[in-house]
Image 1 (cartoon, helix red, strand yellow):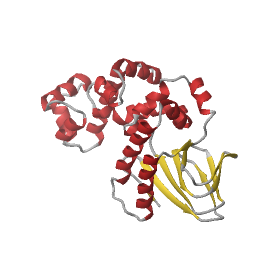
Image 2: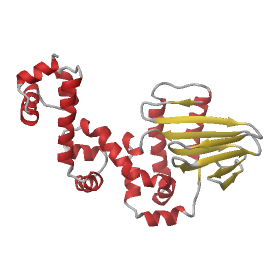
Image 3: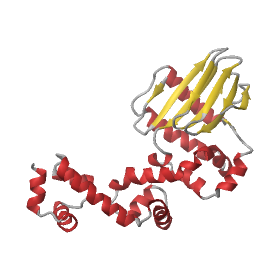
Image 4: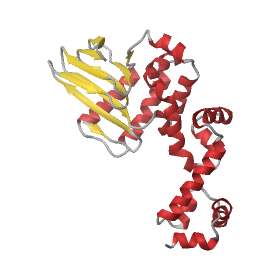
Length: 278
């Protein structure tokens, strides 16, 4: 059973019988939780664990990883959490800050000693609830949104920083991509660079440094250029009304909207009205 989500997270549940072999090619950043049963787990041709079912385990996989599960005892129950978009997009930037604040070489040293993690009791109770809900088709359209937020809260609360480094290490190489995705998904929501930085849980100075590194120019200039391009495109190619544009681009008033169009797009009041009423 699986379920799409408004928060770009997909939960999948599997119940595998004795003698079953399950092959999974990972297409997205993924967390895999083994909740019950006996299985041999092979990740990229390397056996990482012969799971005996006493305590649940979990681990992360990155895009293009290959996972094989061989059921060798009782029924195996698995919960898989896939991230359609980078973690940063849906509000878990503190986790990525943890990764960014430590040198990659140090993360590699720590992570080399640990391939999987024991599911702690409180986390297990939550995961059992999610698994049972999926198996019984008890869910709503906000199921994944609510439960993904709860999952990340529990992981951050129950595991220390060294453990979190290791848990998320497979996602490390995507951090730059995640930041760019975050900016592209959210720059329209805020008028000021400071507000966008705060939304990503960055200090303003750190946000500016990272932005310059990833985009090659100051955030204020980039965002303003994007806003102008997007606004002109909406005026010319869509049927959005003035009040919708004001709301979408966070203009404080209709007068300021028209002044902005004149100053930044060289469009008179008449030009704007003609475009909107075309």
